[in-house]
Amino acid sequence: MQNIIIFGAGGHAKAVIDTVEKTGLYQIVGILDGYKPVGSKFYGYEILGDESWLTSSKSLVYSGIVAIGDNWTRASVVAKIKDIMPSFTFITAIHPTASVARGAQIGSGTVLMAGCIVGSDARISDHCVMYAMSVIEHDSQLGHYVTLAPKACTGGNVIICDYTVVSIGAAIIHGKTIGEHAVIGAGSTVLSHIDAFSVAYGTPAKVIRTRVQGERYL
Image (cartoon, rainbow, N blue to C red; front, side, top):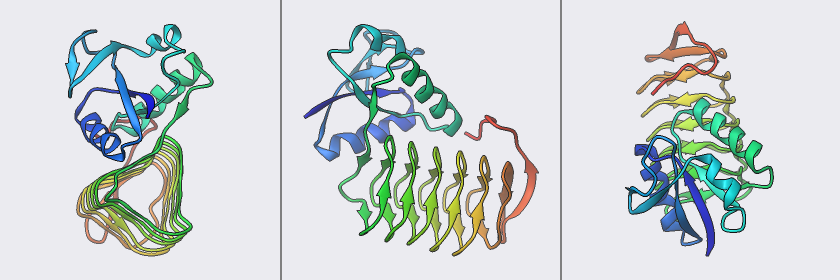
């Protein structure tokens, strides 16, 4: 098995750890989280420190995954890791019950959780999260650092741009584009394009307000 590190020790990290364990491909050496006491336990694994731990442990671990739910925060941690250790590689974790169709592409650092579905020739970029039972249909695209919450789904030929989140149970009909840094509210039905930096919800989904880069949504 390949030794890896998990970055993050929150609720989202538990779901990522479960997915990683069930792949049967990786040995989790420990957890890096600067907000937890070194030596304490999280989900059965030891907290080793923060990202700086990597500088003294290059011979032990050189790959892992960032298990932080907020897209912008996840990107910030990835950037910090790359700065500390440029050769660090990010694994892709795919739960054994996920369905990935022929022609689909999955980027590094991305996690596909239990029961999610990736359709034919869909393309998922780096460091995305597809939660349980979420669906991206054929020929659709997810940009970098995109999150699909549980049971969020798209039709075919949908484009979801970088840093956007589609919340629980939201649906996007075929052929629509969601701009970067957008948030689609829970249970919404998207019937038209949604501009970047928008918060939209409802059926049909309407833009309620704009948001700024890095604004938290969790």
